[in-house]
Length: 239
Image (cartoon, rainbow, N blue to C red; front, side, top):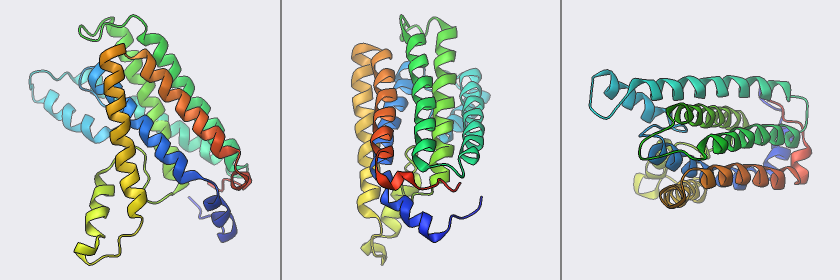
């Protein structure tokens, strides 16, 4: 992936991308709550967890099945592949157009998943076909999200995983002899995912999956629209 020239990079930085990515981090917490609490101990945003759980399932550990993790990982990879092509197709177009295209795709996937969630019995995991459909749709959305964020190259805001963020907080702290770079952004990312997970857990346990899925899609689209209206988003994407 080629590096954008300096003027475009500074123009991109002028757009409120960090704020958008913090909002997207909140939706990650929502999706994690939906998948783990509502779909049977499967992640659709965090593939590290799925690889670990798949290992448990392969060993015959009780309570873990191979199929949900295979579906989630496969769908996640498919979403990431589509996002890679979408980003390249928008290389000479505005950042706003690329972001809105990506947000629209993600929101539609989450809202279609909400349709499959209507009438779903979370405790029984039935209808099973609907459970797998929601796993696949949300995993595609999160794979698409991850690949898009990766191309944006905004430091310390991956929107989905926090291991490196927490590592950076500790390793770059004054205690470790560092200068605490991006500490506010890193802490904001942690708080955003925590808050989204807490909100998602409340919604899932009290209302089911439909409302948090609809909310997640709405936040993605509304936040991206607000970011796209910023003058800095008129610059070329330069993926």
